[in-house]
Image (cartoon, rainbow, N blue to C red):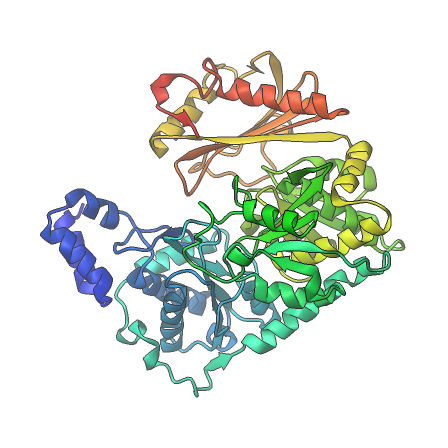
Length: 588
């Protein structure tokens, strides 16, 4: 193993960005070995976000160049005509996003790739849209979505317009390790000849095509009923969304005057000054939007996160504000897709998707209505790619969602898209209100038809990945030699699915239908008793957290809520699987 002095010397040899070069130089001079270990010992995982600071473990000029060199080499050897097809490059409004994007462009230009340059801040979905629209080899988006202000990230889209999955993720990571020495011209865009045939500033044409795709997406919904003008509050959460929401309004026949933007959050600001976390799901994130709505006598609030790939909604119901969960919004989208689907079409070929941690309501809807339902692993990298695989089997894979307020409309892009979601939602609102309904009352009708579903989600803070693994290993052994525990509290476990070990008690041969991964921890259980309950426990791949997703289903909201909360408490209580002081875990 290399000494910390050797790692520091390697950093200083490679880094030509004097700001981060001098950071490590100063830490070395101060003999701050603990900080040097944290910065240099491990490498930032490819495709994840991280702090913007010096060191191999963080987002900085050197690690961006190294990632780009590895990706360029991998594409060259994996995708036919990759250099001619080119790479789409976009960035959001975070600190250093434009700088990092320019380094990506410099590397790919030096490697002979056509550069499809989006030339200004964009929302993340525009990159995968552009990839499929121009048939590029790949796309790179510099963004950390709704992470804190000090973070940034490097997001890669494959030639199919979806995020990368195995084996490409591991292949690219290996290629990065083989291409660590930066080429000299990678450090500045001044090395790029923008008059070259390799350079294509495509922002205007791509944005126009994207807006046309949004317009086509909502046409079947607009045909359901006459458009009713709606007034609503919108917040882009200090991000890029406003510039893309305005043209979206024209697609649903709304004038810009009907959208009241939260003034304090309207323009891009990488410091996110009005929110603790720039995530519409976080408690308090919509406080300014609610205040704006109250001041303007408006009952509907729409929100995007800073890179506008997620969508949130709140409605004033009986004098109180209610923010719908991602699962509730997901069910509403599914219902309006069903309403607008051609009546002469074969409903069994319509396909919709959710991730394994999301609500089972879509599965119940599919069983009742006859469309194809499929579950995937967590994340839109799986939802998008699995949907494309199903589409290739002559299904109409139109929609997917995840509980973390992400929604995919494949007519536009094979990834979550907060602008497409907002546009569809406004069109749906107009349809519902033409029938005397609001989104909230439409949701209640869905519950009456398909049953009540109540989510109880939370997380625990774990001291280390080693501790997390030990906890899950302990849980699996509780009923040895039986392969899994038979009870949780007073409820009997009727299904046990472990995607770490590759076991599912409900399938022939006990092999899970979903992919397994021994390097992660994810267990799903189903329990009997009053109210059906499904609970998934998983270790976060990016944070020191153990996450819990519990959902109760019953004929009444009271029973569904009680069931979900009882199971969550059984998981977290003093004598539970995750209780006890010996693990050192704590509630958030």
